[in-house]
Figure 1 (cartoon, rainbow, N blue to C red):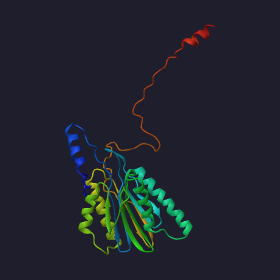
Figure 2 (cartoon, rainbow, N blue to C red; figure 1 turned 180 degrees about the vertical axis):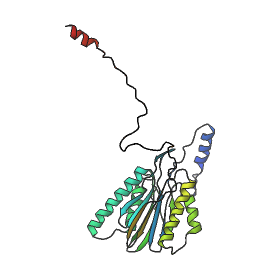
Figure 3 (cartoon, rainbow, N blue to C red; figure 1 turned 90 degrees about the vertical axis):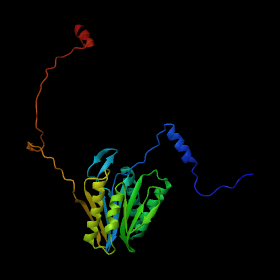
Figure 4 (spheres, rainbow, N blue to C red; figure 1 turned 45 degrees about the vertical axis):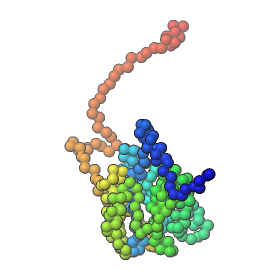
Length: 268
């Protein structure tokens, strides 16, 4: 007699994986995004923030990269994950929004950008490693959304993503309140990014902030620089512009070497 299928979760593979680990097989590790990106809704619009460290595994590849991407004049998007994926997917949707504005002669809506992003990411089932915080202001007011690599979304008054998201969220949950003004919103976003920078190895360098309101957008590049360069050479830097100091010179005289074929030709 065939039993009906049971509902709920199946844990058969858990026992298999435990057996494989005991036999010496190393399970694959998790990939970290290595970023802190945040956003919040304030009284007049949306504030987005991001750190500026780009990593290649344990190596800091870029100390001052841009993680806040242009989508439309009234919509911007923070990206965490694989840099190439976040750049490509935001550029693609940005061009689609531009064509839509040409066709309709109307301002882009945030929900349009959200739908395009989540549809594209869902089609690739998480293989496009882009975790996004999307923010903007349109005719219906300010909006803030998070988009996960598999295509799921959230709509929240404040949001964080990336490897430093827990540190940033602790700042938001303790200090966020409704009806923040512009200055309070910018300061709270900067504090959240600083929490990620100082508590997460994948985040670092400077704080970028983008303020979107009905009147326009202000991109505050390197709004805060909490990690200034402190090393200065004891000798100072007195090089003439365009030149580098020559520490030593060595000249080696080279003797001409005659190849065998050339010697035979000379003999003829």
